[in-house]
Image (cartoon, rainbow, N blue to C red; front, side, top):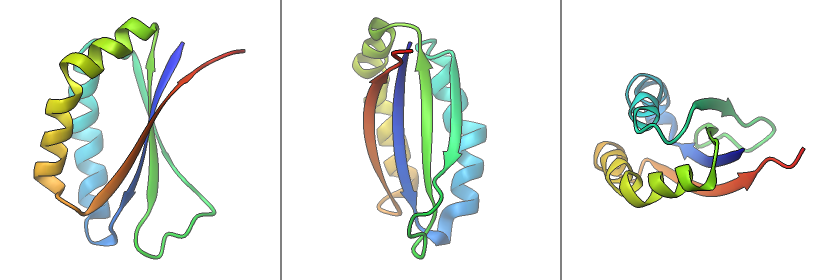
Length: 101
């Protein structure tokens, strides 16, 4: 299994609205691509959250080809929608991981 992890730092001014948007709009859109079978939202603890909370969103894919399909066909459009809605009120870092146990 592969995990596509996105770590996002959100400004305090938008944190409630952003989290609601993530759960009700963005996650369903990503999962509707069929490339991932599950998404988990986590909040990072023991980090400096004076400017806003930090979240990790982990999307689970059964294969690297499913992840590749998402990156090639869907990710750019969905990223642009996010930046269009929220502008520079968040920063994101992305990584791909493979489960080894």
